[in-house]
Length: 105
Length: 474
Image 1 (spheres, chains in turn red, brown):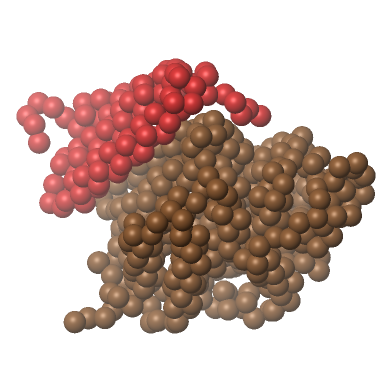
Image 2 (cartoon, chains in turn purple, cyan):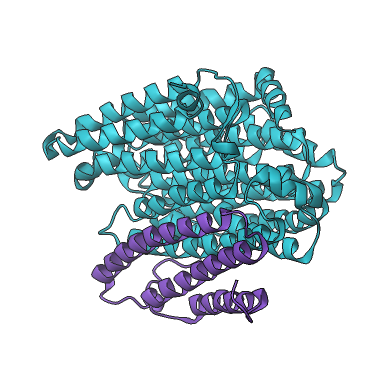
């Protein structure tokens, strides 16, 4: 617990991060930036878990463990996503989401 | 040495072992001999499937994180059989010249995703659930982009990984809020503290949206058609049957066990989702010509029907959902099997390309007709019984308007299912697909599907058995 900073401050930051991530996912064109937005979402979840654990349930560790696993899974996800984005780049020579539109409706 | 761990996790450990053996053998096989790997992997996986059928006493591992009981074992057996059928059907695809070098990867990736699903099915806390879900969904993106030189396949892979990562993020945000409100990630502990407080409601909505992505319920379904179309057809079959089935099963368990105290809350949201999913899935299926897109929207509509079954809480709801998934495995894999046989023999993947199929390939058209009748729910075939019990389950809770909407949708779905039958049997074509003989593995898989379609509905013991084991959950 940090003196002078309440749980609400942390939760406001994490909620903001989450929704900035969602907005970025929808607005951004570059596939790598979309991936960054997803990382933002996952990190906001990590903050949530850590803060809930530290402030509300300080005598257990479930939230801490969960956040560690999220970091690991996020790395795996990012590596597969980047591999697939590179594959897209080799097919169409750019990674703009608007150009990945062969299939629609 | 305590054998409890090995016995309870036998499905998972066997799959891991099979995957590792195939990986090693693949490493030491030259490209010219890769075709032998198909038979070898099939043999290993069949053994793993058969061993899974041996009954074992129920138990709990790792302080409640992993649960093994008769119901989860039965469901894992369903998944194993489904994957076995998919493997049998992939024979023609893997023997294509451009895929011979990737045989090992194909088997290993599918078996590892199945491993993730098994963990997800057995999970007793949100951490195991989440890791299982991710193990089951990350490698699938690689499988979808398996034809990496085709731009459609690459596009489908990128769409799937980005959207499934987003949905995992949303799902996790929901789980974190639920953790904040209840102070635990174990299903049984959370269930004691769940009340209709704002934090729980918010968390539940995020959680349901994330799961809706995986099951492709309607406001979250937009990825389905694109991914199903771009993926190789056998992977599409895998996605639409196995991935979806496992996600539906664990969603049902979580709704019934964790959110037991707020049944009103999730029944309202599920009501809306079920109506939307059935209707939109059906209406979009009407205008498809590509067989994979067509089956994608049909599987969205079927997911809507499953949601109707979940509405009838209690063991009847659980039983009807598991029973429907069991039938759905044989039904959908029958349809995909025929589509895959045709695709690997002639490359045709459109419904208009099926014109006059009956005149050249009568047996394949008959199997396709049976599978489509089962999807539509026409009585003597298993699909009817599946839908019947789903509606019965919803009826036991008094959701008669929902059932009416469901039945209307089943009627609409007849139109497009019969459209395919009409193309095969009635429409004339100057250049029908010429006669071909599919491989023995494919014939075996189609035989299994047809046997399942005819027998499951009439062997009453299956429903009774599922009923008796799903009682244990409550």
